[in-house]
Length: 379
Image (tube, rainbow, N blue to C red):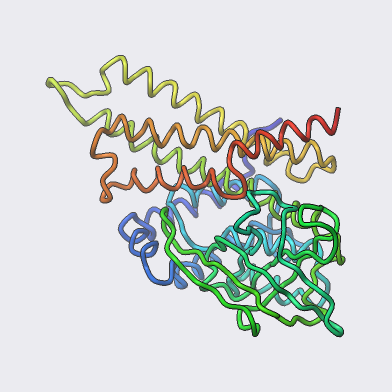
């Protein structure tokens, strides 16, 4: 396998890294992350103009990338800058529309790719515990359309989203894969209400309630009752994105810790000269490279036709990222000492983000169990 990026991907990574470094410094990021909106519409548009959104989708979909390594390049750069703009929602929702949408849905996809529409995945529920098929929200036939009832939790950037991809049960029991359907719901739909709140790692999220929400027939994305495979496809891309974002954040935390070990002095010498800290840092670097290998493997397998191969690679990467990300957060703070926990130091924010990524789209315990289950199914 060739581990070197193409020239186009290297140029994209350099462009994004430079833009983040120059226009998205920590003070700017912190102001945006703590704002009442939760992200910057101006910077969101500029990211779109740079091609950060177009790189997430193939040419047939209106983009210029779309494979696993394109997604990884973009989100690794975003992770280095702790970018809070709604890229994950654009990727997941856009991927679902691109895969199952018809001609009538194309304007929505174009708007997502161009950054004109903020999209969000509304799938998690208070009792779902990461299981994709565990959906209690219901959708029932109502005339030519549908009636939606239920609630969704932790919808990222839900307050500002103009379009939601909502999972709902049209048949079967609550945990059945069969009978799951996906719907595109505009924000201004009658009966949809939300409550927003800040996230501990920056940005905002919302709880959504659907009370007798009436949707037209065109709201259904894909085939009725067969939405699980489509949801798994879209969430798989989100898993890779989160893993790559975590890798970028790990690199930033590693670099900050190395710099601190070189400059902080005790007994007249840099603390990086102490053998105990050298051993801990060396072990941390090895763990980060292990995480990088897992992300590369997941990116390579993202479009594999074999479901077991693809999904095991994604779960293996998410498990590894969860474990190593938490380790990087803990070790980096410990090697900084008390200053590592201060709000003014970027490291504390990287640590929070690394820990919270583990809890998005399934934590390490969930993905370890999923990896084992997928292997047992294949045996």
